[in-house]
Image (cartoon, rainbow, N blue to C red; front, top):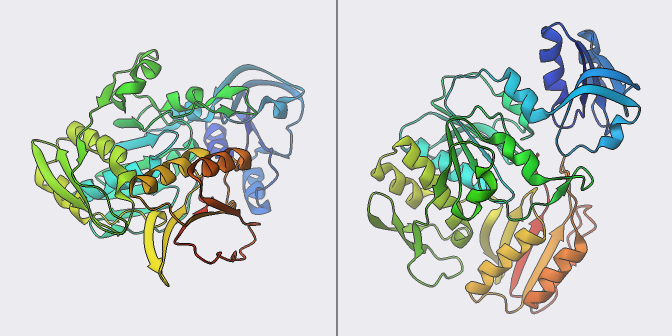
Length: 404
């Protein structure tokens, strides 16, 4: 079979050797022209045809590509069958370790960290793959060993080890073979592949024949794909008005109602929906009550995700995230507005990109910031620090970065 793989930014170099090992004639195209020469040479040494830019025109039995890759790169090519990278992953995934895959528009990393923290506190040996980094997760926190993409083919590149649970953040899709699959939300079914497809088409590929956890409000979106669904229950009630830098007091319903305080070093309100989903995972895995609440009370948030500090009398909120967009800006400002913190606030956005596909839409972000009546600075993205105007009481510093 003649196989063409498009895109080496999101895992073509992982899939190519696997198809080659099955005896297929394989070609891979570095359509974004960013793969290092060493990677290209490694594939050539296996007998893979490598193209930088568009592939050679011709007919292929099978084409596989990321769902968000535009068809323009297939100009001059015909094929009998096309599958997305997630579906190719499904063909090769044979990892028998218990695996939780998490995708969605927002909240993927937060959900993965909460799940990992709870499972580690229950005595399980946990490995976490996330856009912040990959490595073992222990009760003390995440021991990041390496930075890896969260594109679906990287599910085939998980390290060996006798882990009880692999927790995997996935950008668009999944293997459809996880023991538990979570879709955090589809807040905006945004356009992908130059707006020729929608996010739903990619994210549905995570759905498994086992346990799928989705929002009750989005049940009808995912039900049409015929997989078993478990819907997230609302279990968290905010007990008192939140205050900047102070613990957030909650009542959480898990095997009965319990009081719990979230650490004040992060914006706890932004974690509530992720707690709900993490608890649904705990239900599916029969995690004991004591472990759940010990974990919630000791969780310190995620560095750079709603992290709060005070320096020289100015409050700071730090967001370092590949998913920074008008939606995440609105979420953060809405949270701070509920805390009465927006007087004298300034949003500073740094559009640094490290393998981040979706670019900032400045007009949409400006519209959101204006609606809250706060200031906005968008830096050049060159690492220079902007001058903070006199009288600023709160700086919301958002850097768009990460590994997708």
